[in-house]
Image 1: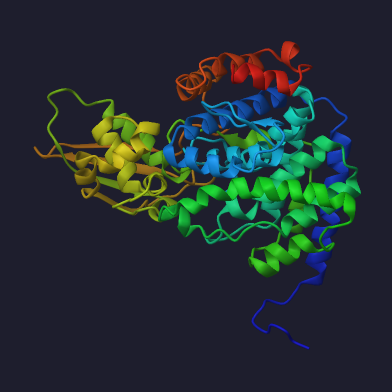
Image 2 (image 1 turned 120 degrees about the vertical axis):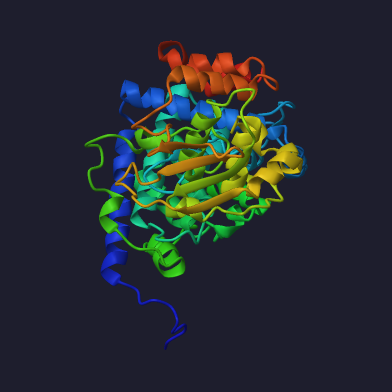
Length: 467
């Protein structure tokens, strides 16, 4: 009986290969839990934790985030885990994770994974941090669980790549990261971890990518929803509530029509760098696909003098994914963060691409609105190989006919051109200082002083962050 003739045929060999690869990945994860992290990996993990907490803190002051978090937390319950913001609220772990998950992508300043669209830290940490605080896990155990679950999440994303921007990764992989972090920290064996992930795969959401581009704020809820789903998957697996052995294939290949690369699930596990070492950090509060154009624009802004003539037009040559972000009249802060015209206009007018360049006030700024209309974009004539696959060439033409040009082949922030620890620590201070004045000092200690913090309960570190 054919129940749905429009569906692609199931490749049984791929389905079986993915399932077997997931089982081997889970066996690796359990073995890795008993091994120390290399120093560089531990330090990188601490930066990811700090970066995402800072992103949560700065977002929590946004009126819509604050109001939504109040709704999430309204049922009340046991005060197990912290919501990172001015109110220093504690709530049941799953609700705290949902509230922090809502905040983590809001400012577009959270850490991401450079090789493909996947913010593995953002999917894992809201749930993992809440679980670690509630269970009084050590900092060391939390960081190890982050690195392992980050590896799991990105390998699943590599196994099922999206060839076009259809489903947003915040929906596609949200529950995977959350469930992995919880299950690893709880010490599940390989079979139970696998059952948790099979269940979590069925709980992801088909969040359309155009919701980010067009600024639908529902997109910012997907990481919070994934945290709740992750807890459900991890809580239910010991009860025998799980998915089919081929659940991942059924969801991503059959449901989402992803390409399937079964070998990505476990090839080279434990033999090279960790996935978390290939992430990137943001200084600019907008989609990473805009960063090369923004970085080039910041170079031009640095040349401006008080007597510079007004800018008549801005032209940008950039890669295909940057060209997809050309909305000239954003009506939400999210739409602004996915708008090439807004990003380049903000730099030209305010000389910044930080959080203030994409807040509600920036949407109402008449000078920025006028400058957005002067921005045009076209295809870059020479796209390089990764990591130079997201280049930009920006031209400013002034009213007196003068023309300036700046080029950025690959924006800073990734592993090949990382921001220094000093730059990132300054970022953490800027994002948290007004709300949690002691947070940056605690996060700095987490990064630079492993010997003093690794054996500390994560709960104690949280108390220092929100003190």
